[in-house]
Image (cartoon, rainbow, N blue to C red; front, side, top):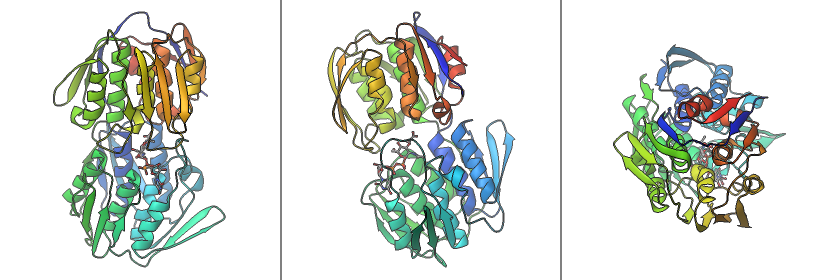
Length: 418
Ligand code: EPU
């Protein structure tokens, strides 16, 4: 098992941090290959563990995944797919659930286990099952395996009781080849949903309203092949901004779309961080004084939950008290115990709220990365801590950030993979 040794920063960081393609967009584009007889290209793919897992799962299902360029893949399904998802792989990441609706749509049945992924709270799949049932599928569950069956999926009106990103993406894709019209109400508005719909439309799908809470899909008979260009990862860009604010002299973050981070960047400015931005870059200067701010995570366009943990690290250095209200997941605050052991002063008020008092100097420690985003938060904390930290379990970090050590070394971080 590998880990990171990080020596706390004495010199201010500077340079350029290019952002890679978005994990949560590439994964769904890979899954979309199940809908295409003649294959699709996916470009600007990040080299991360979750993409490896998705490729393996697709291969086991009957899709060939071929690397055809530096960051470009060609994916082509067989005529008939395996309708039983490989349980070990499917349990290892949340996006495996996206395949289920697509296999159901083209093969008429699918069997799969409960999807895995980061342990950030209860992550049920009731929204998916309710959607599949509304489209005419029967759903069973026995001995840890879900079974769905439908001769053909029919368009339906589906009202999401809660906003779900993968729920929206899965049901939107399942509806593309279904009979008739599907309407999704209270759908997720994340930019990744709109990018996916634009791609499907460029291949002949008829989706309207993606990126808004109401999406209408008119089923079509088939899709022609096409190319999905993965948009930049807004979570990676936001995490880099926090590193720059805490330890940077001046850092330029490139290949990104600041318009998809507007609430986050506004909050960062409110905490006293200087930011300049253009269409596909922004520059962050290290903050002299960080001011406390309250944040409440929400679905897009609100403050994104995936940046909650890194932002907490920033707030440990703010002068005063900040309240963080995590509303999306019910188990995304457990990492604070490790930050407290480093010297932070964070109090858990209830399972959704913490109060961070600062500024508190942090000390290097041995930590285990509990999940992807908290893992990166620990890296950030270690960068500003006094002394040496060792971060274990970094396979979580590798799930979502491509060769993070190389990119951070390039701006001066003293970090080594061992
Ligand atoms: N939920 C239900 N029932 C469902 C589905 C979701 O109650 O059937 C609940 C969840 O438990 C959660 C809330 O709804 O409390 C929102 O969950 P959502 O379904 O939107 O999350 P997701 O689609 O599983 C995606 C990203 C997450 C990101 C969230 C929120 C992927 C693969 N994952 O998860 O990304 O945090 O949306 O934006 O797209 C990450 O990249 O580290 C990550 C966790």
